[in-house]
Length: 470
Image: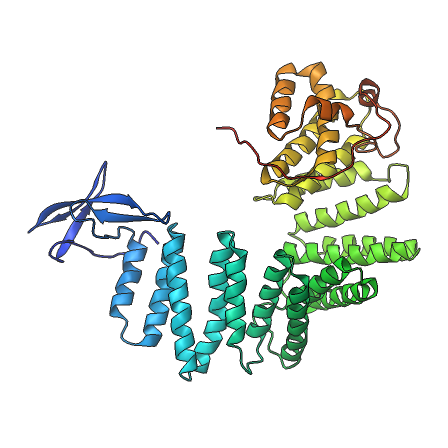
């Protein structure tokens, strides 16, 4: 964007001028001379550049100047909508989210006025603009405002029966769920389900062919929380059926394959509860085999392998055949994910601990590498503000036992990191390695060196204010 060719003008007379950048930024005009441009920090947290003498706003970013020019040249309302939308995008791209949000809301109001004046095409654009405005509020952590934006948008639906309306109802359902309003969340998702089925039946799929599967998964989660397990199983089966269908008709991405593996895992758990272990095992195997057939999605294949490994680990006291080889596939695949979210880090930690199960107790270096990998990933999750405390402390306890033998400096650093999370040495002394990283519960050298307790503290999510290092 910064390479766009635009003119810089004198802030005093408006003639074409030269922009000179260096230690200071100035506009040089042949008639008016030099005008310095400085940074101004606004009370709302945004930033703008202004002239040093009068404080007048003067834009330096070429892409924004180009968009501002388009706004000035807009000759009708449609052109103005397009120009303001572009300007909002440009402000967002250059880190000025408050300006971008204000413009997005202005565009939303203009779109609604034009729609109410009879422009039905603008009404469709209005429905697409609603989630854009709500996204700004969510990014600021204001879920209530986001819910209000969606609620106001849904008030304008009238008799519109489009997939855009269905998508808006889905987003409203998610916001209600985030605010723990399960009643309105379920209502929104059920309305979206009926409308999405209607739209898909007539070929109105929009830009998200997975919308119906998403709705089924969401309803499964809501009714499960209300202990309506029969309904949950029905939604679960519908979600899996829809995702199987989409394998033949929709674009395939790693994220969608992971969702398929999750869906098959949910159904497998249900079969296991019904005492149908063969059906459950077959579903876990099928998930692995399906995803293995899609090249270029190593992370999704790793998720499917790990899901199956977790299932098998609970079924037998013995280490499953090929366990080490599978972990050696999973770990590099997940480690290669560019931006690791909470779930990726937790799965990496679990894979490292599973691999430690296969180690000879005397292989200190290999054990140390695995425990380091598990600890580092769980510590990253803890810094995000939500980690399974029992898992973290069990891993940290075992990691420190080895570090105390081989690397006292690193052991000291780890203890300091844990103290920043509010985990003391006495907490670690109560934590037992147990079966984490040792599926058959045989004592390893680490276990024999560790203090054992009869009643480990219960697993819980660690949600504390994190004191970050400077």
